[in-house]
Length: 397
Ligand SMILES: *[C@@H]1O[C@H](CO)[C@@H](O)[C@H](O)[C@H]1NC(C)=O
Ligand SMILES: *[C@@H]1O[C@H](CO)[C@@H](O)[C@H](O)[C@H]1NC(C)=O
Ligand SMILES: *[C@@H]1O[C@H](CO)[C@@H](O)[C@H](O)[C@H]1NC(C)=O
Ligand SMILES: *[C@@H]1O[C@H](CO)[C@@H](O)[C@H](O)[C@H]1NC(C)=O
Ligand SMILES: *[C@@H]1O[C@H](CO)[C@@H](O)[C@H](O)[C@H]1NC(C)=O
Ligand SMILES: *[C@@H]1O[C@H](CO)[C@@H](O)[C@H](O)[C@H]1NC(C)=O
Ligand SMILES: *[C@@H]1O[C@H](CO)[C@@H](O)[C@H](O)[C@H]1NC(C)=O
Ligand SMILES: *[C@@H]1O[C@H](CO)[C@@H](O)[C@H](O)[C@H]1NC(C)=O
Image 1: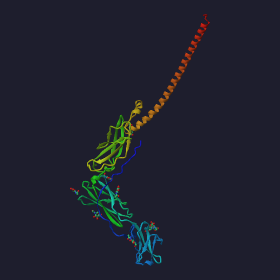
Image 2: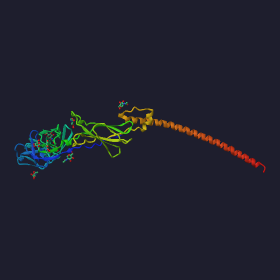
Image 3: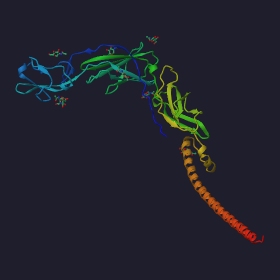
Image 4: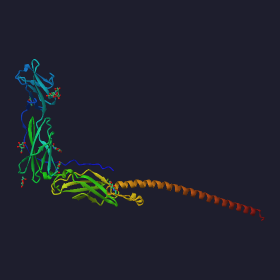
């Protein structure tokens, strides 16, 4: 029995973009003196400074220690190197040398884009944690830092704690769930500029538990239309001192059918009483916060397949060798008895065949005896007839 999963991808509710502040482009070039890395904007004219004021004739520029500069460039009168409309192939280690070949300065050039808006989504899988994550809408190709905060409607600004690198998500612990909405402020800063994305979210509407776990279904001995379904709360819903109540929805259908039957329940287990006897069924369970009607249903649990109890094929053996059935593996024991009974069937079939052969043999032999007797009688009769005819012929007329 294959119990494969078709798991709908996580429902991430994307909040609504409230306001966007414009890019603060700092400067086309941002020099980091400590590591001597220079950042430039892709597609712009990038100027590299040699340091000491020199003139064009006394300075030599090299890239990766080669005096060949593959990129289209010019050297200004004071010895600065200008790379025209630089693209990524212009990246590398630039060094400038005096006319005697002595190194004056090395600069590592990295090119990219200033930050753009972020695509932010938040997940609320229980009442005590909000996880917001983001992806860049512009690939900046440059290292960035993120500052994140949030504030409720009228409450003060609080931190959303950014994860350790890669800094692509932040967590809010103990969110004030009851507030109507919250603004989340994420500012991305890289060497070429910074950009703030502000997202308005409603935590109580985003609240979406993880799917129920450990879903199992078992048949009930003697009830070919019943399936007992068990599950547990998602692990991410278990750690509150007093867990918030959940409600559950179970859907099931015979394998091959496209129509689901639905049942709701406040707790595990749940008994299905209208299963299709003798058919494997597919089952899934999902959960929702029981108190908050604005919250989301979880995804469905992975597809589970189970069969109701079926006793028909096992009955004859059951009478002779009663099997100690056990609710939890009724299926397994049914399967065992099935194979046993089929072995028995094989044995009795052989005996039957032998019996049949004997009967046929007896029949055939008795038939031949009978025919022989009849033949003899007929022979006698014809002899008698003949003799009588002869007698008649010989009789004087
Ligand atoms: C780059 O420099 C060239 C030549 O100096 C100039 O024609 C061009 O307009 C400059 N491009 C930009 C984006 O500044
Ligand atoms: C460029 O310099 C960095 C250190 O600044 C070094 O790690 C890297 O290997 C250099 N690359 C080349 C091609 O020389
Ligand atoms: C220079 O080295 C960098 C790595 O540091 C490399 O990405 C780049 O392609 C090299 N450029 C040239 C022209 O060799
Ligand atoms: C934001 O991300 C979601 C998936 O997380 C994607 O469906 C959507 O197209 C993205 N929007 C933009 C503007 O990139
Ligand atoms: C702000 O919150 C208060 C209660 O905390 C609520 O009455 C008010 O409607 C909220 N404002 C907005 C714009 O939602
Ligand atoms: C967002 O946060 C930045 C600092 O991280 C702050 O300068 C800016 O004013 C904030 N914007 C809003 C609308 O709260
Ligand atoms: C809430 O969910 C997070 C993971 O999503 C988990 O680490 C945390 O323990 C959960 N908290 C509670 C109280 O269940
Ligand atoms: C029921 O099943 C369990 C494990 O499947 C087994 O350990 C136990 O002995 C069984 N009980 C009976 C009465 O067969």
